[in-house]
Image 1 (cartoon, helix red, strand yellow):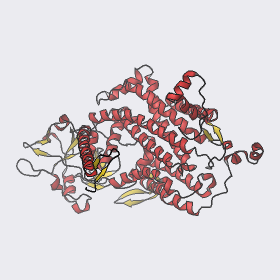
Image 2 (cartoon, helix red, strand yellow):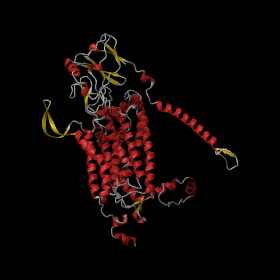
Image 3 (cartoon, one colour):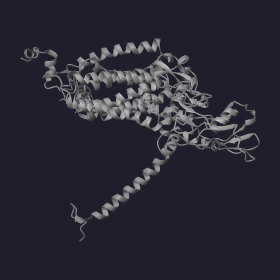
Length: 432
Length: 186
């Protein structure tokens, strides 16, 4: 990793010998002494937490693959066997299943952090885009993995999602059947989903390498969004941020452990304890919680192709965000108006999640009722309309609010430097 | 001396035109090689021979009572055979096809039996919602036909889409009457 002059000095003959041939210890040492802004807060610890999540998913996943059978007749039972009969399977399987939720929880905090502090702005556009690619790969991995236990939600989730490809004009049906390896989700599908689910985490690991490389090349953003100017503005990554990240990881692990040990199924769906049945759709199909907002966007439009395009658009818009936000001020701390719109955005993301979990025709609230075709129907706001309002705001935030606001908003005065922001007037005496 | 000729560092005469031809020809052969190796790697994901060979199903429709629906698995998908009531048939026939998003008359959705007559009481279709492939619930929805619980598509008693996000009517599989009361799907 590049970015700062190396201070590593090999002390012993073997390390000197190795350093001349493969400077891998140097790379590690430079990584640990990377100068990081001195004002990073706890929202900046989620990169470390995410690395831990990825490592945990890969380790538990490889173990599960040793006991799992990717066959329609045996997959469901083999997962139950892992939970009941395999030594410590009761621990490792929930660590993997809950771990997926924890991974997404952490990535959403990480992304909202980037959004709030303007971490996507120049010169960090590529860093942000690689992050979006990681998120996309995570979504694919999460979806493929959810199919493997072969419960009712696994099967019908796979049917609905692969149905998206069927909406492609002209070649849709052939494309869908090529992906499935048959006319419907079946053994061929399960087998290939297993193979790809095993592959993608390593692709994610590779992308994480690029993400960290880009991070170290351009330097970290920070809560005030002002680039570090002197050495005083920075601290060595180790021990200052290894300790801070480590503390945050432990707190995160507490939440993780609560779910693993006390509520291993709370984040899943009860219907996935029923084996997949191609003849019976569950009365209420819902994706895992981390996909609910996108599911709500999909259902907000009464047209199949338009719904899919809108849902994809919700992710594509993230990729072009660096060019949509016209403000030259990074951090929302100094953008009083943008900050309000940001919190409204967060609010509507939760609303979308809520809409995704409910039935479209159900009512959010009712205001009286009226007669329709001789039947008394309640009036008010249903979830379809609520999700339309929230979808509208989601896109308006990126496509209208951020581009326009950057041009008309008057940002607050920013401090001269990170040191000044942290120490105030004491910065001068410290400098002397 | 043509303008594509010049001398290289060793003083040898080089024909650039000839070199370009060799580069392009070599590249073309390599590209063809990659494509011919790549195609099997892509095509292996398609339907295997045993999947394609998945046979046909025979159904005795006389065993289905009026108002009852039989669900049979065919090629991994359910086929609905519904013995429709007189009321359902009337509703299906009296609907203006132009009012449907995917306009079709009820009799266009039936296949004649061995005597060449249509049997409107038996509706045979693939019981898969044309939106995202869920299985609609029978005798439900605003049109007394089927209702898809996934995203709220309403189908009428002919299996035609009437309301909701699904773009098409439920598909009619290839089938035929092989005797008075037996149909063969596939």
